[in-house]
Length: 558
Image (cartoon, rainbow, N blue to C red; front, top):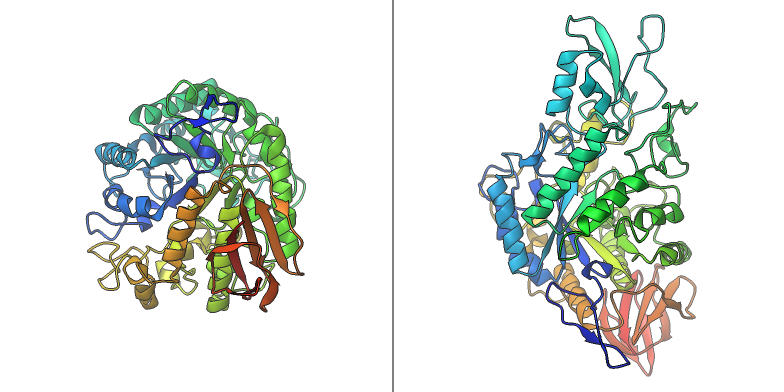
């Protein structure tokens, strides 16, 4: 069962009182993208006050924790992932007092707060970087970043062949204080996001201090952005090929998933273990294999790591079973829970992905078959919530929101959209503010419109329109999370038992529970494994047999 802040101890078979499982082993964690969740002051931009006002909704939904994407002081070159001050709140989101009030209000509702930490890079407006530029070559502050002289007769070429994730070279040339061309600095993302040099003691000391600052304020943990990127290979060697984005996720790169990152996280874990309340570290680590991901969650490192292999799996029975088995097997030796996620702020919502043909990637330009996408998304959600471990829910997926694929170019703000190469730049589509009511300038998001336009049809997808409506996606999520919390066979664990099933159908068993998922486009008749608990679509049960609709999942108690 899902554990809570004040969960009682439980009895063992020997009669002794056992400590409850740590809350994070089976938590359902809800990702809030602050600028798009709720607007408390009517300026069209979501903020901390707006989030605080909607915490009762998240409590009623049935989640255990809330992960907040960055709200730090930032020029917003990359939606807050370019941090200028890690101990200050950007004015568009509020103040430090608002952050304190939000954490306190969440704890009063038995909700935990996980804050986003961005340690791979900062903003080019960070005090350290600005001073390093002012002081020029030889500045000791430049050692805290990756400044290098260029190649070529006049240093006119980048120091190596690394490419930015957002497209183009991963290096930008500076101007010296006298205006002459200067050194280059490394930025694996936008030029406004210089990478820290994690071999420098001052960088390590600074982030240990930042951890303590937020832990002292009451944060329950950190989702670590680009956790795989902090350490670079010695000498920053060339890769030797272009189009490097295609290599990501397939090979260990000289700038990603270097073994040196693990000592950093061991030092962080020691800090978190000093604090009461089971504080957690969550890795956003893109690695070539789930086995490499498991290295981040060894007993003395992080607590969880995102399962991107699962997120990118097609709606296919064999592929799903393979990634589920592989994920559980990889985490078992290190004793960490497996995590499951279908959407986040960087990928096209799964409602839209599943309505398109497979193999198109995670950033799509086409809406696809809306009805098919929603049907599969609902089924995929019940499958995900039936699996052992912890699950992540991205804001608005409980409403069945599709991606907004037809945003006009003039309103887009994804920095990679404006670059010639790199990511497709269509992340704005999953960041459109979510609808709360049927009416209003922003469907209840706030009183002053929204920073990205919302489709008119979202009125009927709003929280108001779906609340209390049998069969709505919102009520499906509420029912599923309630059942997951109450059923002893759901939540924490490290294995499933596969049952015989027709082609295209997944059937997995856990204690007193069976989940059946039909990934085919046609109804399937199969023996009813028990009493129907919940289903993503109507299931007919007669004479001991059930007809599982196309692209549907059913939960059974046995």
